Image (cartoon, rainbow, N blue to C red; front, side):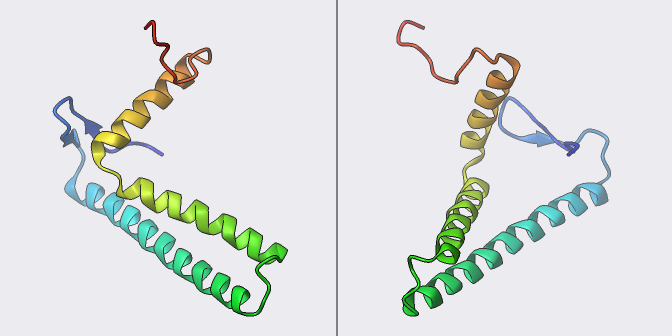
Length: 110
């Protein structure tokens, strides 16, 4: 994915020379994706409830759907996180990617 914005040190964003229509289209795609994830989560929860009521809470289908529920909940939680938390996680991930020896943990001595 090509980034359309740049995060500034004060926490705000700039779009450089991008057209407002391009930015709005990208935002619309993100909002559509969010709504899609939320709808999928609702469907998964309904199916889990149906399986549970049918006494199939120990089935492979239930386990697979439970895994999907956890994944979808985590994705939505991340999308709802405050920008500062997202920026911190992104910085830590970039550090780890650029330095494979960096496990993301800081020693007490550091």
